[in-house]
Length: 175
Image (cartoon, rainbow, N blue to C red):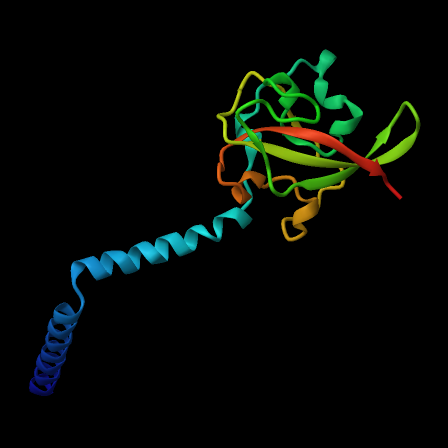
């Protein structure tokens, strides 16, 4: 029985060696590196759909004067652009607005009406850890409802993928 097993192993080793030698002649190191690079770059396409949790970078805010309690920020998740060179509705100079965004419906206590708010990330500049970080999750849905999910780095759709801050733009009355 041992002789049969030894012959089987030798045949297997011989066949494996022959296959590897043929492969080595046909495929060089460069083609392996090119294929490995293609696989790695292809997997990078899946990254934009992965959640990006900005809470780890959150700076503490004073509860008495919390700018996150402003009515437009009812579903925001990010650093406020108005504290890092931008405004409530525009990105700071040197950054660009995200190509995609998430939305929320917020109630304006002054007129009692509900408004549709578009939250756009501003991309292309480094974080400003001194800006207020707001994590409000009113109406947030799981990641498979992307337009209603605010824990995503929405800058992944832009050329400059680095997240900087978030703006709150009133789109109109919610029906």
